[in-house]
Length: 178
Image (tube, rainbow, N blue to C red; front, side):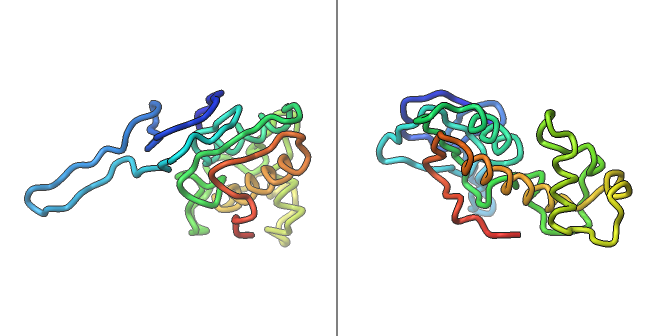
């Protein structure tokens, strides 16, 4: 995700890997179809006031939001601009297929350097793998869908504990439970 301090955002249509860009479409003359490369994110009729806008609510954007909320003063308004709910999934963790595994062992997937076992603790607390010992789980490559749930739960905890406000264009109460 990208992190921008802003007074308001107006007319934003899409975010690409290299920054803000309008939606790009291509027409195929032979098939008369339109291929959208950067689907419009959100079109705003009025500027939405916020102090920090985080562009993208996948893994990186969600972790950025958590970091901002953890150290935010009271009254700070943070917005995540993301076209796909639930947050935390993005391209990397959006799969619902359990055979799609993380490419790093669970014991090394914490989102927080000050809590290196955090993802492992999350898996154990949720009982995600009740027949697997903690030490073995730390070395296991677990399904990617668990990481998305982890990020969403940690974001909700950060929102609950922060004096700042997560505002704007997605709602945490709309997130389905895993």
